Image (cartoon, rainbow, N blue to C red; front, side, top):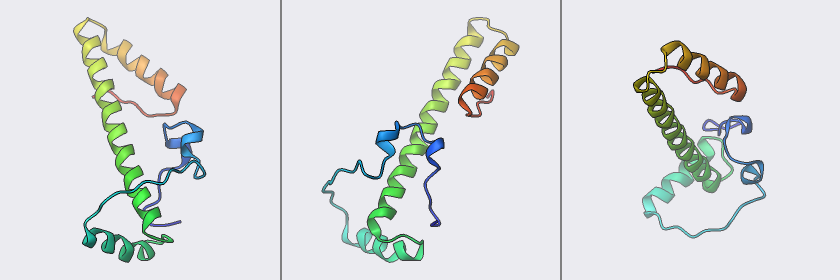
Length: 110
């Protein structure tokens, strides 16, 4: 395992076919030369077989962080809307606990 491993598949929101390493697409992307050289230098130090797996890990981590942030924002907006509509704190907390148990994702009150 390398130092920047991606979260386990069970922690990801993507469909199984999207997570499969076999479901890859070749792309062309421009990077500053110094960035590419730094990726190539760091990859073996961090335990990666090359710069491309390291780059994929960075992209996946960024996507997961943004997805988590957006999902959290949506939950917070929903909780606030429910409060404004007079739903009790206890009912909101109970619903969040139920969803957390069903999805195995911890959702807490803000």
